[in-house]
Image (cartoon, rainbow, N blue to C red; front, side, top):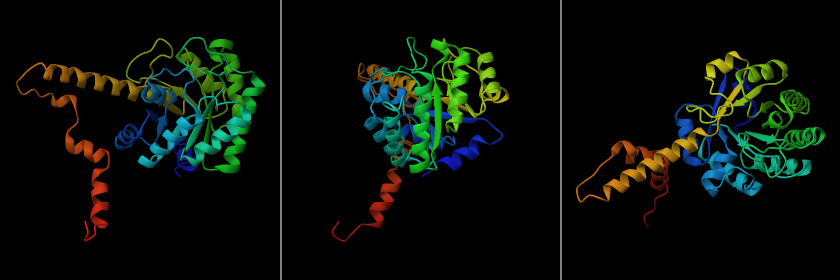
Length: 299
């Protein structure tokens, strides 16, 4: 299991840790091949791709545990897993941590929204009370320590929008005291807000840059190098790969629509990867090797 020690060493390094979002085995393998040291299993990415639904609380623990297990089996890089609110109260959080550890998660993120949660960049969020939020992180830390000591715990607050930045900072510090290894305030509205959180929170800080290559109306798009200078330790890009995959699929279908309207040969090679690359990406050479190793005279 690739977990706490490896991720902790990366976070403690001199450079900011860059974590692209993933949502399935192929996306995780692409992140790994591109040279990134870890991937973030985005709850939004799974809800969007697996259910064709928005990130508004439709996912369950079995959904995320199944997806985590398949992705962890597909790659060797550590995978951070978005576990939303932990799917219930503090006792449910305790079980969630154990289930996701067994599924191969190297790190798990628990947030303080009320259920049903919403994507951190959607309007209408609300958070549970301070004491309940801290108790859930305490439960997560207890489950980690007793069941999965090489797992990292990431604690997220969405309190900035409903209750203000002071409350978000108060919660992050309390989460760190409760045992969180990394903390995260989602949907910060400005570079000044990010800088203030980095200055006032006594724990490694993560921020969310969404698409990464396209601006949003909430958190401003800030280069990783600048975030590093501002004191940020981890930056995630949970929306990049689902949005990029959607753009690629849309283009491919547009090319197909053009192709079927003509009786002449029509090619758009830039719209798809080539066959050799794709079969290698999904592990066909490894399967071929196994078939050759275990072939019998009866075959």
